Image 1: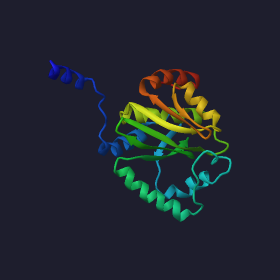
Image 2: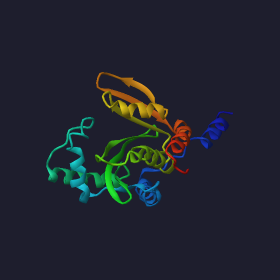
Image 3: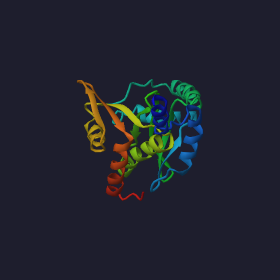
Image 4: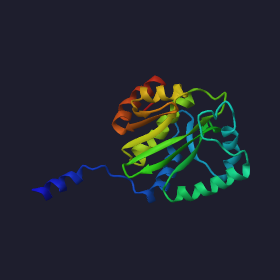
Length: 206
């Protein structure tokens, strides 16, 4: 009886995409992910100057970790990152809008609980606000439907209220908070419901 129960249970366990398959799956996704002109492309060392310009912008860096002002340091970070990407550990993207580079976002911290974190989300001043609504759809579609994670986890600064209110509207669950940060977990099932509402709100065909 016990063996039968275990065997039946295995049939319904989430099928995680193995880490060594992530790079190819991500590259395939970026080729087809555009939503009304907004898309993700993989960042490379050639994007170091653009990334650094966003991370050093005082209008945009209040809620991210401090960054060296050295372009050489950013280029080295990207070279080290590319090894992690090919190792199936994380992915860094440039957000584009109708072919123009307008921001960055990153997925990382893959866990044994079938969860991923995302952050480094920065958008250039003056960018159409539609980009800010489409980016989470692009990220969660990648994480949940292409890489087959079942959960996401992330921290948001308390002061960054517009972002954490948006995530709570999307169904993210607050699991801890202090004077500096709010910690969340987000389940694939909650996203599936929220995606339909968000897509309808912004006029996105799904």
